[in-house]
Image: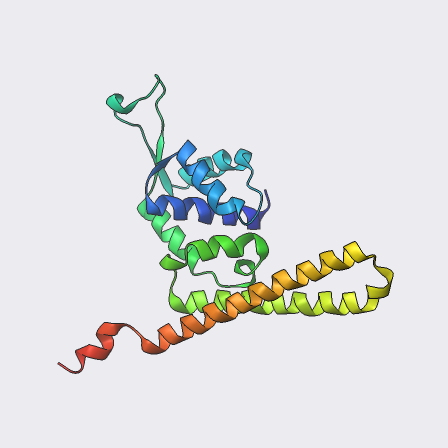
Length: 195
């Protein structure tokens, strides 16, 4: 697995375990829901990732109590360590180009509630910029080759353009909402000076 994919899976695992400790099957289901929407998720990559996170001390295994063992098999529960929480925060502050890419944007977005407002805004603006560049290049290519394409390929191109345009509109709305929220600031800051 490439470094970028490994980092995305690491973020997804740490973020999921930040929510609640999970055993492997529950974690796989949660990751499939999270990552499956954005890219193909290889289950063969989960357990090596868990092993690596264990070796780094970012997660810990917890053996269930004997009374909770079902069917004679114990299910190891994975939970985040203090070091894992620090690593998660480090990953959540990364707002560079890798956070804007197709394979990682959705995972970053899924954990925005744990991400600082300034970082969220940088990621949203970066993603929008990346998609606008993509739109320009696809429109240019389409204009040059339109007469050589059959009607089905043209429809596929049109569908792709509409999808990206729709995402850009969605990002514009999110960015506007983030900016309005940052302008208002926390409610406690505006009321404390009146007392």
